[in-house]
Length: 352
Ligand code: PMP
Image 1 (cartoon, rainbow, N blue to C red):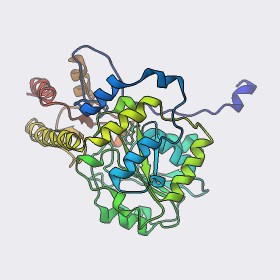
Image 2: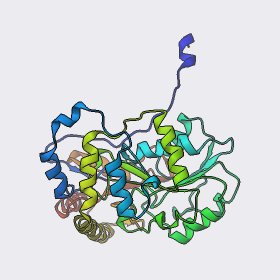
Image 3: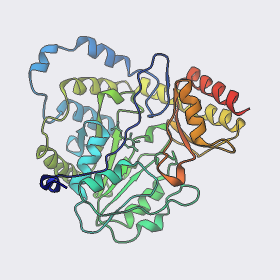
């Protein structure tokens, strides 16, 4: 090893889902929304005054923060925004997980948690989900340096109810509990209604899934004012101008159109339920997903073979090959009806 290498921070990076760019592909591998953002976003793009790009954006992201505060009926001092929820979560790890005791998160969950813990040298433990991929709440009763749970969990799609989240909070009032709600709008109940009662709760959400804006990179956290002040102080110690000019304008437009948002969600939920029925007919078992993806396993054909076959047909789904407990599962995002029909046809031809 060369001397300078000792001074370098070496990490095992997170591997994001592949972003292929193939004409006519069916992309069901990164849980994007198959429908476009709200019409107001397109209008805002057309109306955007390019001269604004000369200037730095508002470091406080006031317009976006205010629109989220109004939408969720909280104070603007309770809202933090970032460049996708990955940015918000990364900042939250840096801000709130600063103990010698291990933070806790499940063995099967969003794999970025382990990467941030390693990056920031935060000790951690990963209690195993049970056989049915449920969180065993007793595992979170012991002393710890903080807790992060994705609810619904990813990649299982399984959602716990608020009684469960509240039980975790009641047992952990001396540490910060982060609930990552990237997929909450597709059928779960948000822990946002608990923030007034639990000052140590931070709820994180995103525009990437339910609001069809993964490409815009907008995420946010809501919690009590003190938590938001702490995470903002850390943000200003790292990069003050996080949100670019355009994301502020387009984000506000997405929040405004609640009718479009609800309509879009209903279509995806309906398609998810139809997909479960179709996949079960083909011999798959699906977890009870409350998200815009399904986590599935076939009774006889391996996930690796299915993934390869689908890829040949330019249908992209995701497999977590390096995670032994789930390596025989596929995670399939819910696309349009036409996209799902193509998926069923490909699977049918191969399996039957
Ligand atoms: N949390 C979970 C559970 C996710 O699956 C994702 C998407 N990869 C994210 C957070 C991050 O999403 P984004 O940065 O696009 O908001």
